[in-house]
Image (tube, rainbow, N blue to C red):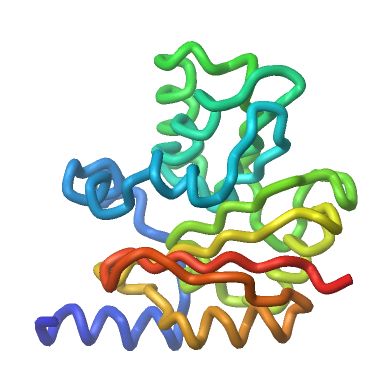
Length: 198
């Protein structure tokens, strides 16, 4: 890592903030798509056609669009992001894919979701946890909306300035009432699966 990358990482850990809208095109870069491998990631998550999926911190909708393609009614994808510019980009991607009937978009923070308790089968939290100031409140809210048999998948991308180590992710998740299930991926994109403790 360069000195600039280390400086950005240190700043983000002390003052977490969302990925800047001015750099949104980086989220759609072909190299990121290759590293993240959205279809493989969704396969790892065990996506089925009638799931209720929450893409928490959807950004430009890269993963949301891929997941929505795998759903049929009553399956639904709920994509949320706190930035209007990201939601607008995600909205355009969803519309271009003809997926409007399977996706609901909300511009909200992750600590107060407009969702019923125990209404979600799968939560996708991709390169988002490190950008959140109140990680405990966010994870508690995700646990609230997750069904008892549901799962939380946390992906961290090493090249993101807000990236958290696998150990940090696991500690935060376990403190919030999740049980560790498995870990996979690579050094560049690490995936961990958690289950709500009953």
